[in-house]
Length: 249
Image (cartoon, rainbow, N blue to C red):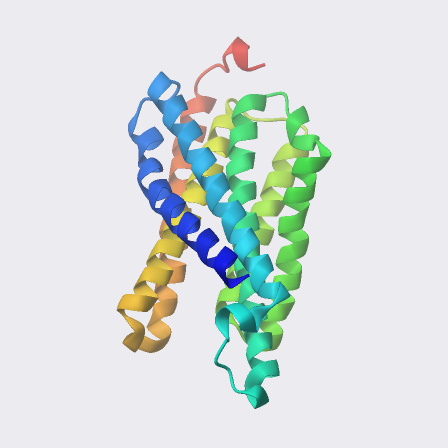
């Protein structure tokens, strides 16, 4: 089991590193161009690999935490150590779900545009509902264990999941609302990739700064959230001033 986990970890790091680079390719190419579409597809596929490998690693740890992360734990501390390891693995499993759902939502929104039937299929509703329900469970775990990261990302996931569900079932969309939704979902997935990169890399490089390490988890989300809000308002004003193209209807 440890060997399988280590193999998945290498895969996860390689694909995560590729995602950090590919994230910028669609952003720097004209929207709708062949390069934008091609690099966007590459980025989505790589992020699916990141999310699925992360989920599999988390499930392995949940099934046998001490064989993977606590081989040298003294017997009298085994139960407490296993509980702590599982708690963090639930958190990482939820992050994998958040990443997977964000990317998938962004891709489906682009395919659906004004017709949102794909967003209402059971598979996607299960993922988006899982963000809300899983976020609630993670929030309770965070409050009980006083884990700030659990609380922050639980609230974030619940909000994003709720917004995805609202978009899927809202009665009417504003002009080219699908583009804004796609943009927000894909940037949101990039926030997850860069959060993991800075958080785990920063923890290794700056382990002596104590609780300030939390900044590596929080800052990418705050900055990315502000960027999403600014871009959404910018494009909303722009699209509302234009007549929605007939091809989007």
